[in-house]
Length: 356
Image 1 (cartoon, rainbow, N blue to C red):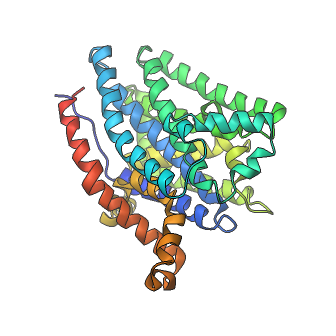
Image 2 (cartoon, one colour; image 1 turned 90 degrees about the horizontal axis):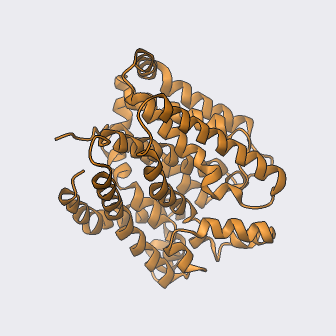
Image 3 (cartoon, rainbow, N blue to C red; image 1 turned 180 degrees about the vertical axis):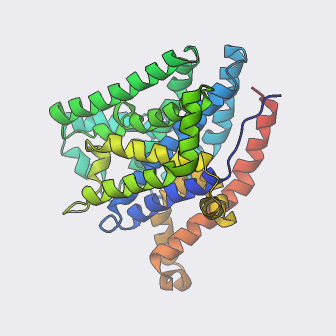
């Protein structure tokens, strides 16, 4: 039976995609750049999901798609609706049905299109526990639409050309929105932020190719892509360092987004192929890999950790005396690990009943 290859070092990378997101939600002034961790998550998702589709594309299309969607539902829905329900019950989430249906990112976009001043209100602390679910809405929309389109494309240059055209269209939409709807939250819709997901898909298609050119790309990735990609990302952060730190680049992506997508893609491809024992040793460090494995739960739980932490601090002097950031991080890890053990892992065992 054909199996899907797994590289443990990408689990470590997932943790380092989550960590800056956690930090930016802790202190946006010092860690404004942390929101780009979401963009790195998108590149990783685009790469891995496309690899799944390519690995099993020789199966009957209907069977493969049904298995894909069922397995994605097992992976995503139980934890998502559990945490969303807890957040709604404890701190409240405005427009809960929109989040339950994974369309809130479009709602934010249309609201800020009509009334741009609503964007500032939407990010107020009393509402932030819902709005940050936007990235999960984007991922779900990608999972829903992309496989349907991708599986109808024949392998080869046509498929790669289609993906590159899709990437170009995302760049074009970004320029259009920046020119004509500059105050809308256009960075939250797949037409724009989907550039990162498509970048990952392009990498997966190139790596799946068996031509000599593709082999040269893999050889280059093995030797120098990761450090080059990391250097490019750091350079982009340095160039774009804002005078007034904020996360405005999320809702209004700058035109350097394409360079960041390339940098993140180089990091993912380089880490996938690298044989550098120092790099592998770092990302394969067991705690990093475990935290990366539960990164979905970490991401979900930390979104409503602040009101939960405040509730606990009001009732426990021990919690109150702990450093807030460290305490919140520790509590996030404990809850995510518990959810993995009690909810996610048992449910994921059902995947064995849904082979591709």
